Length: 186
Length: 186
Image (cartoon, rainbow over all chains, first blue to last red):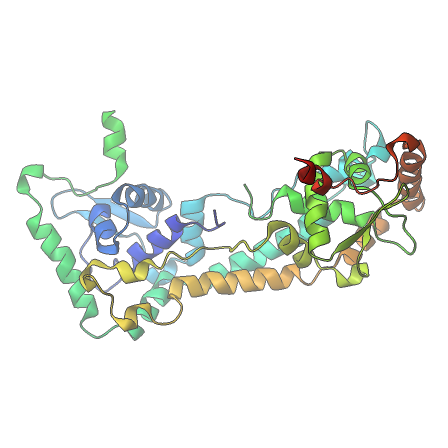
C-alpha cells in the first residue's frame, strides 16, 4: 500500500465539493455516491476529518458536512495527517547500538543523538511534508475550476440538491451518514 | 509499515562496513551477525543490492560482498530504490473520472493531464527523492567515523577477520551467503 493511501485521495476529492461561497452541507454518503466510491469508507474518512477539525457536521434532514474553516486554511498536509495519522516515512529500529563489537552495552557515542541514517530520512520527510503543506484545498478547487466548464459547479450542486430532495422523509432527521451512530447502536 | 522499511535501514548499516580504502569482502551472514539482525533478511537485501549494481559478490572462502562502485557514488536513494523497488508515495486511483454527473463517459477535460491531487503528491515525492539523493553512503560513513573512536574501524575489521578465520574449511569455498543458491535448490 502506498504511504499516502486512497483514503486521502477520496477525502480530498470529496472536500472539493464543499468549497465555494455558499455550498450546501453534504452527507458523506452523497459525497461518496457523487464520486463513485465506497460509502462506508468515505463515512470513516469524514469521521477522521471531523475529529481533526477540518469539517463540521450538522444534524437534520438538510444537514451534512461543511468545511470547518476556509478552504485556503486547509492544506493537503492537514488532510493527510487527519486521515493517515502519525505515520512516519521511516521507522528507525536503532540497530546502531546492536553492533557485535560493543558486547552487551553499546558505548554512549554509538547511540548519542539521532542516527545518521535516520537523520537523512527525517530531512526527506520534513521536506516532503513542507511541500504537502504548500497546497490548500482552495488551490485544488481552483485547479478543477480552471479546467471545468463554467456550468460544472452548478451541475454538482444540482446533483447534490436532487439527492437531498429525493431523500425519504421517513428516514427522519438524520444527515450525518457517518459510521459513528451505527457504532453506538452495536 | 513505514514507506521506507527496515530493509533499507539494515542495508545502509551493512554497507557502512564495506566502505574504506581496502575493506575485505564480507558475507551477508557476517554483516547480519555484526549488526545483530536477521541473517536471512540481510541475505535477501544483499541479493537486491547486487541486482541493482550496488554491491558485487566474489566466491571462495575469502569471498563476499564489496561495493560495486565508490561509496561517494552510492546515494541513499539508490539503496532505497534497490531495496524497496518502484513504490510510489501515492497510488492515484483516478477517481476524478467517476463523478456521477458525468454519466457513463467522463468528458475529456475531466481526465486530461495529471489529476491536481496526484500532481501535489508527485511534487512531494520528487522533492523527497531529491533529498534522499543528496546523501551518499560515503557521507554516512563519515558521520559514523566523526563520532566513533579512532580504533573503531579496526575493531570492526578485526571482528570480521576473526569470523573469516573461524569459518570451518569443511564448508568449502562458499562466501556468498545469499538466498539465491537456496532458492535454486528448492
